[in-house]
Image (cartoon, rainbow, N blue to C red; front, top):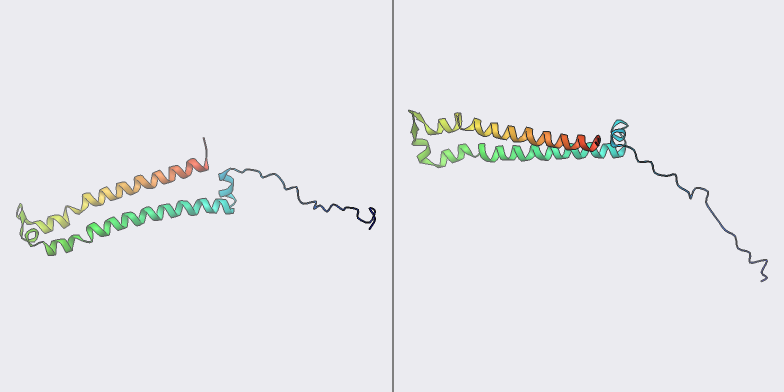
Amino acid sequence: MSDEARERVRVTNPLTVAAPHVRRPVREELDELSGVGDAYVRALVRSQLRLTGVVVLALVLTLGSLPIVLRVAEGVVDGEVLGLPLAWLALGVGVYPWLFVLGWLYVRQTDRLERDFAALVEPP
């Protein structure tokens, strides 16, 4: 083989130079419903659902078990305060402060999640 027959050929692709990646604000990603914006929204919804599950679980474990505790604890059923059975007071009055606390914590945590999401979407 001669040197002329072994001439090297360089093969190139005109598409090897990629366009520069333009960073877009998250706000645009959300407005256009792109894959990135969809991921952000799904993450927010997932965290809100997780918080809801924790609150519902706390509610079920505490208030759902209260009738069982009252049924098992004989002394609580027989007790009286101001002429009212203690079981009635526990179910009729004692439940509401706990519901208020759970609701307050839920709203506070939901506001924190939305505030964090808004800070991510609209940086300072």
